[in-house]
Image (cartoon, rainbow, N blue to C red; front, side, top):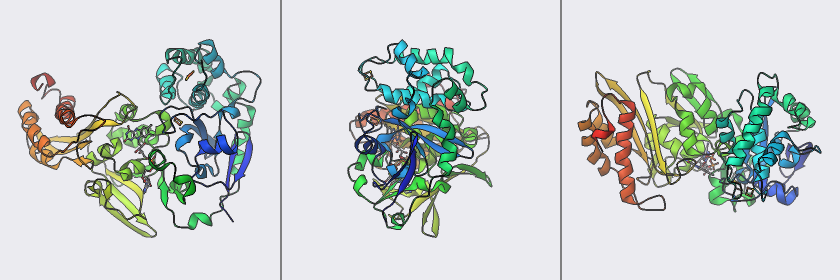
Length: 475
Ligand SMILES: Cc1cc2nc3c(=O)[nH]c(=O)nc-3n(C[C@H](O)[C@H](O)[C@H](O)COP(=O)(O)OP(=O)(O)OC[C@H]3O[C@@H](n4cnc5c(N)ncnc54)[C@H](O)[C@@H]3O)c2cc1C
Ligand code: FES
Ligand code: FES
């Protein structure tokens, strides 16, 4: 019997035997003929394809906007998929649509369904303020060729001035949004309907898989053509390897934990309070709702941002195959360009970070062609602690300057034991230059990347120790 995937599509239950690796976008447009979800870039960049996925979490369903062009159908098992058609069952326009119309935020209309879905999804987030910063976050994954973004931000302002106050201190945002006409009434019954869905038939899931998919934000960009026909292991069907806990002085992060979950988790904020700002440089809300820490580390891109961060935290990786499990230091994991200390069958299950004391400081820097939401030219992180005025512990990483995410061993060894001063930074510069080997490519020339490494060294130490070293003395 083929695999059967059971989920709710808008207001109706679906059972499909389509391949689990098929993209949700292709399923919607080609099999369900729901053409409101648009196909634009098919690489997670434009937001035309955004849908909401609702997961049952306790008694409630948590909805997240995601790019359907990078999401496998198989992952919908037991979930609620909401498209623009599912938000639009009433005769009247919803408040989100009315605000966009009022401000001229739609012209050709191609981007509009995705934007309506993201803004509605934003209003559904329990406890979130409808503020200009929030609206900007909601719009972050969307490109519009016609109107520019000022009209959309003004539409957000209308929502702020009209329905925001109703959403404050409400017991259930879903109920309030139904009352305001922003959601159809069927949303009320979704938790009970999700609980009643049959489980996935798993015979095929037990066969060896050709590909593993976590968030899909990298693998679908690289191998999107092959996946729908292949046997795909959908890691998100194993929620036990998701989430963040603290045990015995360590933070344990399940490999499937998304960027968005990491950025706002109290345990992470305790060791890296700036994490939400770093995320702002990395990817849109819609991509961060999908991209996982494990995917970033296993992807082994030399410019992976989370990899640079967790390399500086000197994390341990837990890898499992069947009942066998082992740990490897992330510092030892990368053996060459996309070569890992990992067998093809091993799954990364956990990333374990030792909690250091409060004197330990952390900084992340990234430069890309576009300031935000772009792949880095060079990315870098540092963790440092002083001991009696000198550098007592340091971990410095650079991405985009070698075939692997680079732990700057020689530079760290040079800096260790030295006071933070202009002379120390100057002395470290040639050491750092000698251990990198950047190439010229679309993200910048080799010389430019060398310059960035120099500037990052200065930026890290000037930001963390402004009383000891000033940028103007080094430039
Ligand atoms: C629009 C856009 C912008 C992006 N911007 C950035 C950026 O600024 N910085 C950045 O670093 N990345 C960026 N990315 C890349 C991507 O989002 C990240 O690398 C992400 O962390 C990949 O995670 P994933 O869960 O989506 O991985 P997937 O695509 O699901 O998987 C990637 C690879 O890892 C393997 N894999 C995944 N999880 C596991 C596991 N637990 N065990 C074993 N193997 C596993 C898969 O088999 C696959 O080979 C961007 C992507 C998009 C689409
Ligand atoms: S089609 Fe562009 S983000 Fe999906
Ligand atoms: S209205 Fe035409 S792309 Fe946005």
